[in-house]
Length: 323
Ligand code: FO1
Image 1 (spheres, rainbow, N blue to C red):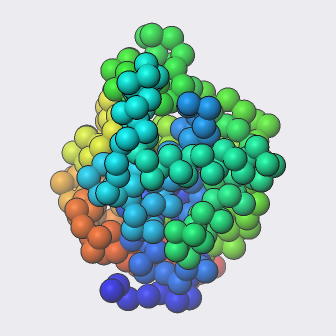
Image 2 (image 1 turned 30 degrees about the vertical axis):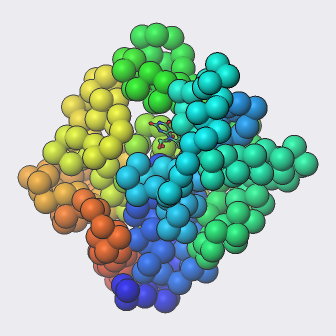
């Protein structure tokens, strides 16, 4: 069990699998009432008449230890009877929904139709799954990520799952972001945090949607914010982040990510294999921290979270001493 830092309040921004892993590490190092994970809902979509929230479910399942360790998303020990029978009936089978996972989508959809908010539902589900940390959707209002590609505009899941990230990306839009309000508790968690951590999620389609919700970026402005690189040696461990940088005309690297978050972050954590980039990152006014950022095991998650917290404390104390 990792040592617990019982005096720090942390808010973490997370998307899918990579972000959920670091959030899980933070949940092992902090008191549950002092950790809030703010999760991307831009991936959400209606499918089979159900309201699907992939990143929220990935973070909730991972922190509850009930996620599928092989894929990162969905539930462990799944069966696929419903999906197999939907396919047999000629229904859409491009998005795999396991039988346990379907219960989440059925019950969430029922509750949304009954007038409950996404954050209320997420809170109830976390209690049922045994999660103690606070996991919040970025907004209770609909914000949908659309990917502009050489095959036209696609909603995120069509781009990511149906077309396997093959289309060439030209841009992104977050429909509904201007009208959306941060979910209850999001602004408080950011303003009360001693430290804000941007988890190693895809900057374009997991973190940017969160930052596009009015008020969230502003609440982060005067805080110590640290980002963990989702790229190692120019590659993402999982997902299309590097391909997206390339198609957006930017050489994929940890430096490109630090620059992407430039005005927002004080510190940036990059992998040992990218240590040559640390000096360039320092030149643009961001404190670099070089370590092993690959999280193979649950213990790795706690170790990286612990190092992130320590690095954050250093930045906090150096800021205080400069005052
Ligand atoms: N990702 C896939 O690549 N294929 C799938 O069939 C798939 C199904 C799925 C079902 C529930 C869920 O919560 C996530 C699922 N994902 C699937 C991952 C999903 O596309 C996420 O948006 C990514 O993890 C990116 O965050």
